Structures are given as C-alpha cells and as structure tokens.
Image (cartoon, rainbow, N blue to C red; front, side, top):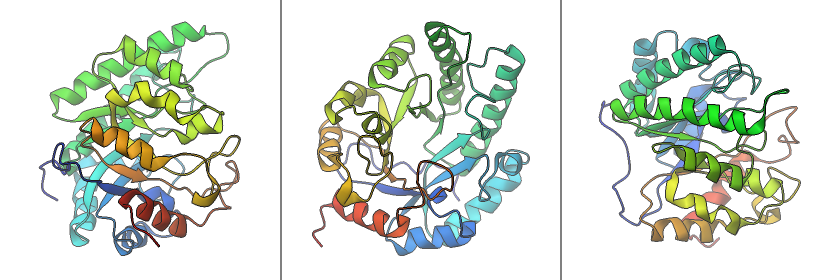
Length: 292
C-alpha cells in the first residue's frame, strides 16, 4: 500500500464504511478480506488482537516492516483502504493495561504501542485505537482514571508526532465504562479521541442521547446492534438508532469511518448467536439508507 493516509475526504458529508476483519475469525485472513470486498465495503479495520489468528500481536509487532509489506500487499490486491489499526495487547484486559499499577508493566505496554504505531505508519493508516485501561482491586477509581489519562495522552502525543490520530474505545469492562467516565477522561486529556461503540453503553441500559457529549471527540465509530443486557443483537432486535447517530456526526462535519464490527466469538456473551455476514450486510444498508 501507499504510505499515504487512507482517510476519507474531510467533511465531505458522505458515509464511509469499513468492516473489522475480526468479524470472521473462522476464516483465513485473506478469506475474511474477500468477504468484506464481496459485501461491497471498501475499507477494513485491521484488528491486532491477542487470541485471534489473523494478526496476533506477537507476530504483527515482532517485525513491523515485514508485516506492513505483507498486509499492505493483501489490501492492495483487493483495492481495500485501511480505516484503522486496533490493538488489544493481551487476552486479559488487565494484563498489559496502560494504567497497570506496576510501572514496569506500563513501560512494556508502551513499547508495544510504539511497535503498533510503526506498523500503522508503514501501512498509511489514518489512525490507531487501543483499550483505555482497566480497574484494579485496591486502586482507587479516580487514581486509575488519572493514570490512564496520563498514559493515553503520552501515546496521543507520540501518535501526533507520527502524523496519526489516536483513539481509545470506551468499553463496559474498562476504566471508562460509562458515558460520564469517558467524558471525565476526555476532560483530563487534550489529544485523546475515542472510537465510539455505543453498544457498550446500551448493554448497560444507557440511552443513545447520553453519548452525545462525546461526539466532538469521536474520530472513529464502531457499529453493531445491541439492547439492554445484550451486547450484540440482530439489527431487528436492537434498540440503537444508528441513522440518528450517523446524522448527528455528519452534521458536526465528522470525516471518519463507520466501522461495522459484528463479532463471532465463543465464550463471550453469546456472540455465536448472530450471523455476522448477514448482519454486516443489513447494517451496511441501514447506514447507506438502502431500502430492502
């Protein structure tokens, strides 16, 4: 791929869709990319996730030059743009958390981030996303949030120096599990943005509008339907008004991608009960305003 950024045109008012390659973990990575192309989606979120075979961190970050060449060739062969690079460093949210109480662990986490930044830069990604940190037994929640803010701002500055935007995903098991906690983190930082996935808030019974204060700092959006008590549902069974969210963001001049992120995963909140291909197609049509 070209080292130039694959960002969509700034503020053009169009809906730019991408799809997470993690949605199809039972396929090879190449086959997953083929499915995305077949769905008519022109960009991909590259998920460098612990526990996933497609782009495991231990391989993707060990030789970033070689991996960027390999992945870039796969994307170029399919004329796929790169929407984002998303790192989950370990299978436990706490293991390499940015705000881990142990400074040595925090430094190891930062070294992995530096490798991710190099990979994303080589691939010409417009930005990168990581998890925001976790809560730890025996550590005050306010202190966990403060430490997360400091470490994330450090990463945002490093990304800015490399010409990339940096975001974190508010997550129901993270240090910013709620809209209010996310807003508090953003108040403590200047350059950190978010990859907004409101399914994590809906799951906890928050209403759509409670995420509105986060929209000015949203640089990337994850899409999957959800309902109170159910983190992933079929489109027809969920409660999130995604067209309304789309319209609010576009009215603000949002110039990022809307990344469809249905997941098939055993042992994780009944995530095997949704047909990711069918639901991705339905979400695509919903966001583009296509009537069946």
